[in-house]
Image (cartoon, rainbow, N blue to C red; front, side, top):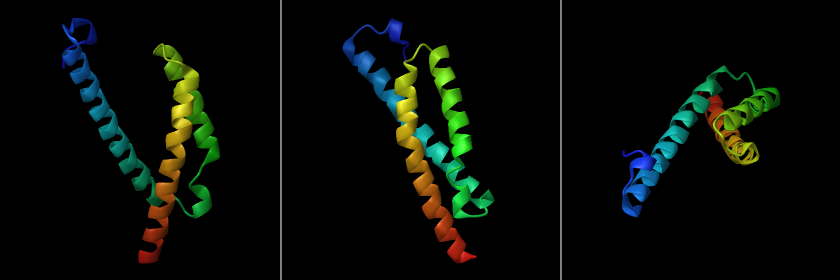
Length: 101
């Protein structure tokens, strides 16, 4: 992939954006693997949301956004959108696996 400042036309820019978006989707899938794997360590449904962990995560992600020169409100908003999806998916996965035990 060509660095953004080395692109010579819009086609190269778009190819770079597409490559990054593909990588983001792959990372979301990898994150899901960890989330589902974590289900095995959750003793009950109530332990899945882990609000204290979420608050620590959000604070850290906000700091990371600032360090990278990104709008921290946007980054936190993004995580406010994806975290519930992961929690819901882990909850369903946990329930399905409890029935197998």
